[in-house]
Length: 214
Image (cartoon, rainbow, N blue to C red; front, side):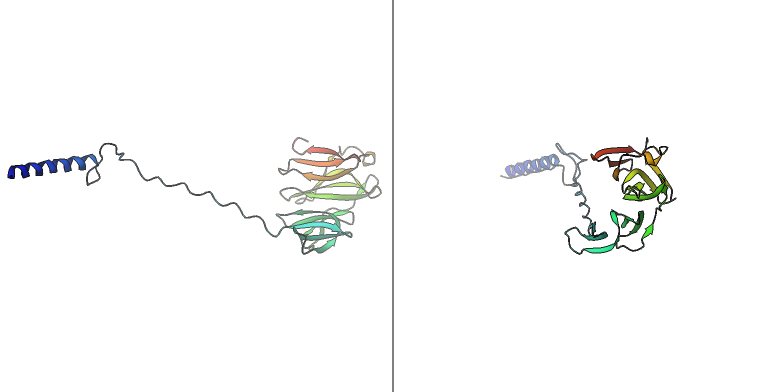
């Protein structure tokens, strides 16, 4: 009887040692099928939330020879001053408008209106600046220039707001303005600031000026 019990005890110890060894042991030692370098894998961080939609945007429009602004839903309509052809630079919160045949800049609420172009002799007549459009970085304004007697633009000019210099970029400035026969409307900058597109002629053809290569 004692021999049988002793034999069973020895066998039990051997089985226990075998099991513990195969499972890595009580002290965490590695065993068959166990990777000692394995570590818990952390889930990737969630993507950042999308940026909030801009708020407080307003629209500028013309009514009764005056510039008005309103919310995008048409509410809160406010007159901010005389003028036409308003262009709003959202980052600067400023407008460029046409007033007294010249280009003015002003705050979005109509205050601090400042002329940035003046009437000059153009083709033997007084000039008429129209259709201002801010460059994407807000340092320049493109516009058309023509004669008051014609009432339309016949060239595209760019005003550098830092220096005050005005450069004609279309058509060739060597041509006498009195020979400009094609009306030009609404120059618009490309988002990268490298091109200007505009309407030309009474058929509303689309023109493009490359400001990098000329």
